[in-house]
Image 1: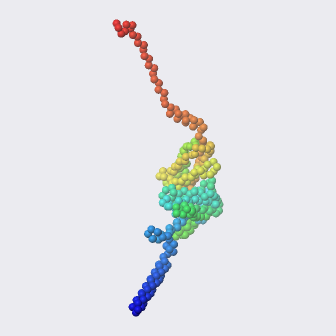
Image 2: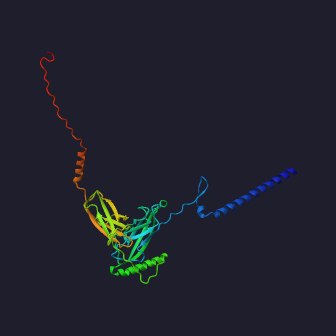
Image 3: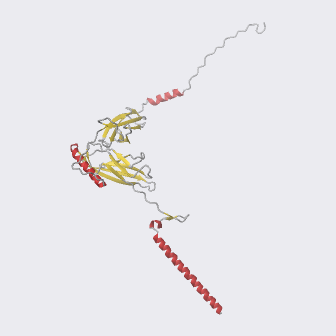
Length: 357
């Protein structure tokens, strides 16, 4: 009986010891897990758990917002009403970007937005640098305050929604009789811009503005009139108006307007080593006779902007042309007739006693 009581006590103490040890281990594990969870950043706590290897997958970072800026004209810059305005700017887009970005410009609230020309060094889709020249049919500088707004819109492969940013600049349109005053105000605007950008400019008692040289444009059209379905070749040569020297690297922007006055086609490029820009436009085959206008604007550092225009007629394909062409094709496909000369076989007369003599 005593042995049984001793064995029972031993079992009781052993069971209590095991339960106490289990409880202490459980409490220690819970405390450690809570401490580790508190030290994990919320972004990782909310991340998904990979079922194959048990590792945390970090959530993808949100797409970078685009940016666009107008570099010319400057804020508050005075511009004569008679000057051909060219708007230039920069953006965060480039040809290697994963986002499909476009830059457009609106002037004085005149809709719709006008597409800018990409002038970046990475190809025709590189809007890291861009330019836009308002045509006379779209908008003109007005006297007083003018407003330009640029817009960049990007379609990101990660985020289906468009990412859009805007940048605006106000400038002052001056009548031609205030040109000298405007040049002084322009110099002040440049000095103010430099000060804002941290660029130190030398102090001057009376700012002097170096006069801009004059540009000249030779605009040549390949054909006039042009038959529908054919191609019109446009050649633009930019040179110094006084020395006739070729201007290399000038920015040329062209518009082709249909008879209603809306822009049918837009092109842009920089002049090559010969001061030339060429462009070919294939005209649609359907339509009636009409007159199109070509307007090109050229700008270069140290020169006043210059605009040149010309017109050409477009005529429909003559009604007889398809039939004549079909007739011509059929004549070429016909198998030529081969004449066999007539062969006459002479009569053969045998003697009456043939073959016996």
